[in-house]
Image (cartoon, rainbow, N blue to C red; front, side, top):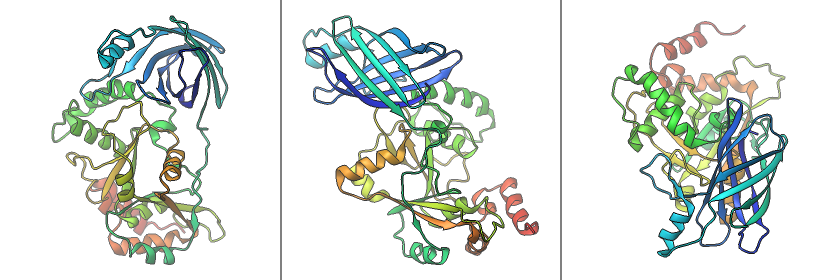
Length: 378
């Protein structure tokens, strides 16, 4: 049941309203815990917010919860308040809004079925789905050679496009945080980030105040570069840095191997003109925003020409493709290159100065670079 579930909530009573439903659940001990968000399809569009806690062994389940409203405040950890109070503040007059909601449901691996009633008699139902753990990429890549791609990349306008390399062409764009089955970003920001800051604070050469938005983002970016799951996807302004990450693990691949690595290309300029960024880690809105974080304590950022996408969306490719259809634009494409070319590609990148030693300043990067040179696989 853990993960991100998306669907449409249909109201079946006179005053109930249809809405976009987002349910973000984590497995916490013996329970599934998280938040359900209901964004009305028609204005006024106050986002209904329902905390959820379901015992893991209850399927089907029945729960009772409170009804809150999302306030969109950026200066508080949990921007949720009593829905009746919030609606009255917005309307500047007393409003009668449900305070309790009763939910029944069941789920399987890819479908969740829900029905609800409130203390005011509103009712509705929904069917939601989630991204499969083994979901393959929705993006159809262009099969090409390194020679052709290198020629195309050398004509790229700097900072118009950004690039991401992945060692397998069928892997979707998906943050490690979501791949690990987590979805409740408010839990992540109130529990994981402070926990890791307490653990690592003494190791930081420069202090980072995670109560400040920039420092918190920079700290999470540091965690990303050292393997801790985050809701970030790393990109580079350099296609050749992306190529390094795509082929880094493919040493001496057999000539007959038909497997491909992939380099994604994203039109950052067009996206920035079309989509307003949400500069927060945790938000109930669909979010895929690009940020350049502070570089303190993270010497890898500059040589990797790095920026990151912060996302609240599990299925990133589907979200981007929806935006492409709505706006009649093309934001994302991909190139698939046979891994049999890995040795040639890594040799070219070495001549360009794109090596483990340059991208990972320090002992680990230097050793990886020299190992690739001194201990070639036979």
